[in-house]
Image (cartoon, helix red, strand yellow):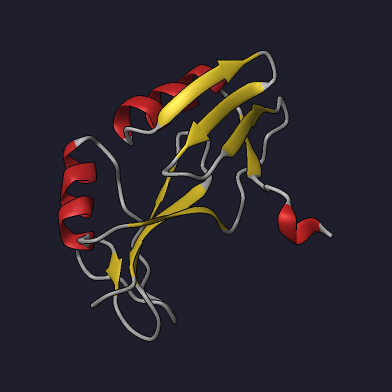
Length: 124
């Protein structure tokens, strides 16, 4: 039934204009604004971001970006002011914020609303 329909994910932010600048300018995504929020187009996917006055950042990764070269992507995003999360527990990241281990190579960062995003490379 639903397997033939399009689907999209969504999440909230506390400041729509700040999110529009971050996703459009910093991350370079196609972003369009509507009265309800922002529609973003990473590749052929659609993601909807909506304002929420009592927004609480997600405690999990809400959006993953597949990249060909995680090292170059992390370096480029850092030059644009993005800070990568540092984890020292069960999941460990290196000095750049990149985790290598079981599964994909991944680096997590937050949007201005505190939502967790990642860049990940599946080919090592």
